[in-house]
Length: 453
Image (tube, rainbow, N blue to C red; front, side):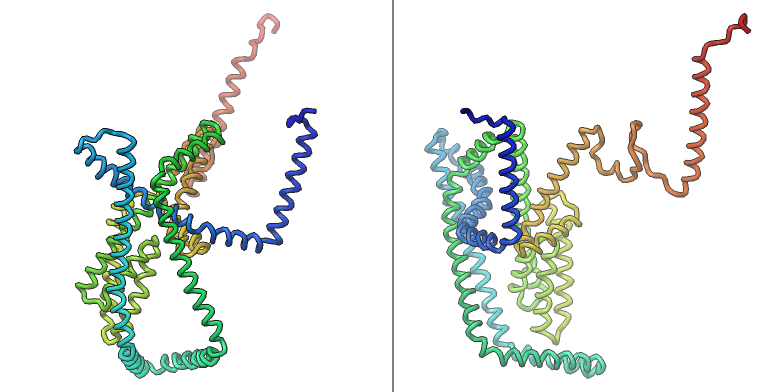
């Protein structure tokens, strides 16, 4: 007995089975979601080194391509080496070696600069903590003496929270084991992330060595699963996604490094306290679009104000400098480096940062903009395709004053001040159309016979 899929009983049975299976899956998702989350968390922990490897290989691939095309290929041409498989292998090996060397050297230089500049700054803050505290207390005493009413209100707030702080301090010995366990878990997690990063770095080398082969395999699978036109669309969309991501992330990293250097030069010239520490904070937070400059400037300004409370103008000068620097970055440096890599307006950038940052934290705020740019481009492409099938324009500006569309084309909305005039014109046109209709009917009707009359 042959099994025929087009048999209606087979199709009914298959449909019933799929409905029951979907119902069971839906029930499990609704009432046992914690088990699914735990399973996904365990799977993520296992695959984290591979995730790190893919991420590093993705970010290092443009560097490898640049080294091969701009350095190694011209060198082989000057040495008059004929193209061959061995030449490609040697170029790939040298390219990976130079890429990893630049990556390790850059990471080491960044860490060295941070340690050499940040550690003395932090040590100095700890060493002079009492001095900063005394200055702050003198400043608060002076402010309370100058403004007694506001001072009483502030003292009430301090007394209220000081009692809560005392209770918390008294409970510390009882919760010491919990604190130690938390510190131990944190240290273990940090070491685990470091180990995953090392394994991921090794995996990224293997991915870079065979990146063309992996890309070819992905294309092969795509053409095997989809029709030719659909596969072309899928590959084209992946290329657009890649260009959007690599253009935004690479440009944002370069932009943040330059902003950090410019901040260090500027804060050194205006003699801002702890210029290196402040510049590192501003440079790191600048990776986050839109909100990054403010996230870095606010704690830096508080730090500058606290360490030198007797000279509050240092904080004011710093804020003015940061405002000028961010205007320079937003209006000149950023557009020069990033260009129009996302195609999003300011509103959608804020929306993407808020939405993805709320779900995925700092990582979501960084990658949220290119992710939403891809989603925005996909929706725009679908909408434009549907409009083209209806023979309607795709330019958004043509829909700003749109009232309705009929067979004659677009009709713009009419301001209220013109409504009466429009009604008069409509009635006049209606009378004219009626008169023309009557005339046509009279012309088409047979003439009366005079003899019969």
